[in-house]
Length: 274
Image (cartoon, rainbow, N blue to C red; front, side):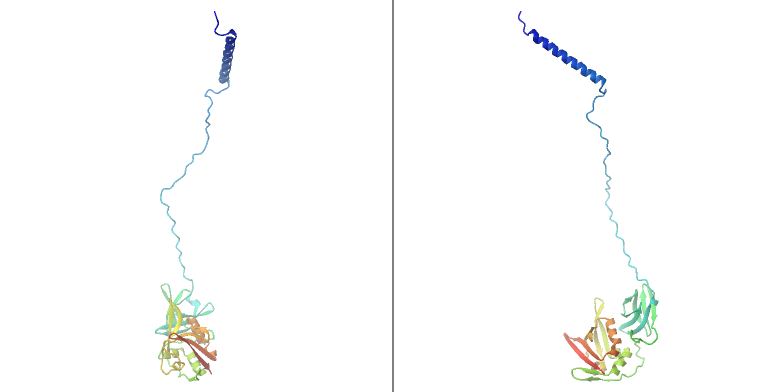
């Protein structure tokens, strides 16, 4: 009988199976002795904190802006001194002193929170909030820093002005006594010439001649109704302060140059004081 396989090959196959069986038994022993019963977990638990966000679904409320309350200046009416005043039906002008500084106010002007409302023969009225205050005129001799206090009473008698205005051709000559009279008697000025303020956006920007009494010294100066006074001796007249600064220094001038606007033309009037 012929063998299909050689005996030697069969022997090697048996040895190979025995070796595989031995290895399998050894691996089984290792698993039983050393490895955990539950086996090996490939996925390891990772400790961590849950991620979450607090979301407010209600509409955001914008914070309302804080209202700024404008505080009125804190002051006392006694801090203001009334140095001079002029009160006419269509104009009220006063000179006051506050913190050592002199200021000219017209009706509606404000100083230290007090608004000028009007004036009498020897006092001025101011308002602050809902209260009214009365400020009396300081009695005494006027000094160089203020004008003389006067009132607008038409019954008040004044001396007849002395002096003349003489036409010298290219200029006019004014007697100094005439100038001194009108400097000391403010009422007599407004009886012979009317001056109206010109305002722009509520601010005084100049002055216009509203009327001139015929035959008065002011008519002889060459001024006419409607003239706009632009400057006096180079000082622009665009506020009550500038106008009264010229007025209070009038006694000390020797020559006077008056620039006016008549119609659309600028003119220059020259005067000599002697």
